[in-house]
Image (cartoon, rainbow, N blue to C red; front, side, top):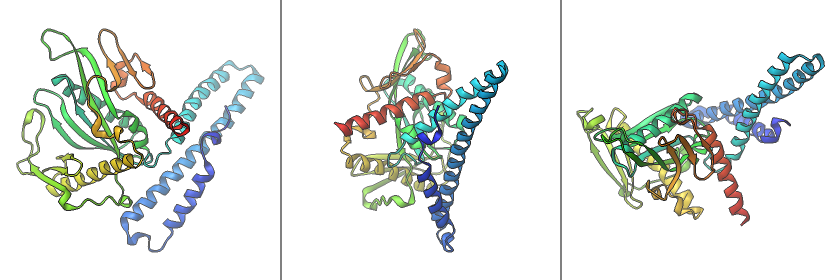
Amino acid sequence: MGTVREVTDLDTLRTQIADLEQQSGAPDLWDDPEHAQQVTSKLSRANSELERVETMDQRIDDLEVLVEMAQEENDADTLAEAEKELTDLHKAVGELEVRTLLAGEYDQREAVVTIRAGAGGVDAADFAEMLMRMYLRWAERHGYPTKVMDTSYAEEAGLKSATFEVNVPYAYGNLSVEAGTHRLVRISPFDNQGRRQTSFAAVEVVPLIEQTDSIEIPDNELKIDVFRSSGPGGQSVNTTDSAVRMTHIPTGTVVSMQNEKSQIQNRAAALRVMQSRLLLIRQQEEAAEKKELAGDIKASWGDQMRSYVLHPYQMVKDLRTEHEVGKTDAVFDGDIDDFMEAGIRWKRSLEKANAQG
């Protein structure tokens, strides 16, 4: 199998840890609590990553010994144990290799995900809610913390839109390949004639802003409206105008927040997501990739990147990577790591081809 060191740069990781340890030992570190928190969090994550790599390398060494023992003693049980460990290690090393492919400027960031219902009426709103649950279940499976920032409910069922954060390193790198238009084909539960319905939803993923990003937005470029928070079916869940809708006038970018308790908290949360979106726009403009702007996702025919077919057969297929599975229930329950891994490899091969071309 080779060693884990072939798919990770331990020297760089150890240099990073030494630098962070030096920063964390500075006597004036806690004069700036936010910066101190960032340094200590990064140091903790880097140490965890180093421990993970070294542990995996040790597992490979132990496996080699186990295989030798099983062969020498012709022990079928030990050999079966070794084969299972080999399968587990192949998967773990593959995951680690994918992590090394996440080398983009913002790939290490936490992520802000927005899902919007597209064409397809009530089925599209229901599909948007299914996708939100899929991603939240994916995060839950891995123990990743999430925070729902905004939910706009549709009249009959489902969601018009929803925004949530995934607060773990590399969330953006992993989830960025989920951005685009998703398509659902099924017998509509909302059609009393039981007809097949095609509906669409758009997924937008942006990196979460950090204090060091220096995205300054002049006050005169922002339009801020306040309104009452609403729950399912349009019911009011707040008797005060605490929800906030923020519009960046030059780009037309709109952010709504209603899940915090006060207008001040919602305004601060909206500003952070607005800065995150503008940061991504700036990055894409610098790379001359305007066609990939989040606002260009149409959520309709001819624009989809993944299809979820529940009738007349069951299959989820990514149209970019050709990766497909037949267990649709598992996918909607958050089993989407294989799709993400295929997407990350596809994205990196595309970047390499563009760089060579």
